[in-house]
Image (cartoon, rainbow, N blue to C red; front, top):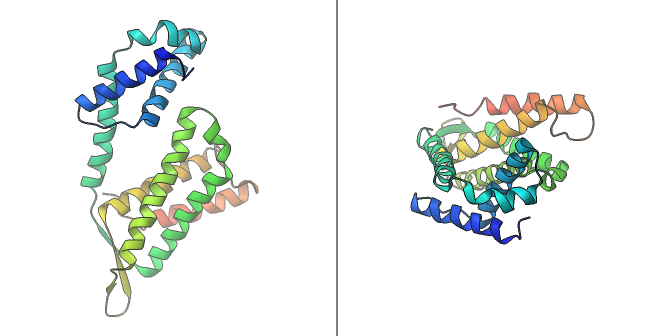
Length: 206
């Protein structure tokens, strides 16, 4: 399906329109957005995906689709703008780093999701991106830690707070609904949810 000329033309139209509206959309992201559109249309109309690609992609309002992408990008940027940096103790930073590592491990345990629907794939990739970005920024912050009178405090930037919050929140949600699992029973998953929720509470919500 993705190799069809009609599909690739739609991908390029979407990328061009996003560019006009101020967002640079990667080829992989554009392909997944168009693929999800095809999946949803085929499901709602009871058609084969190939039929949708051949007969319906040309009628899609590309400007409106691109506007949705732009709004999502603006929402992500606004979340960072609206979030304050946080001074977190070294002990709590260690807890959060461990939780982020567990989020990455959870994705690896449920790697089969990457081969399923585009939404499942992007959920998993989103956790990996947010967790890795958060860990990278925290690693940089550890090199600039502040020595308080009786403790070591770490300054978490607004970006690191947002990335960590996203990764943990999404992982908790997936574990809670049973979409992801560590593969050792509901009791272990519930324990991880409890610990991650407690660690998530260390981060500011605003």
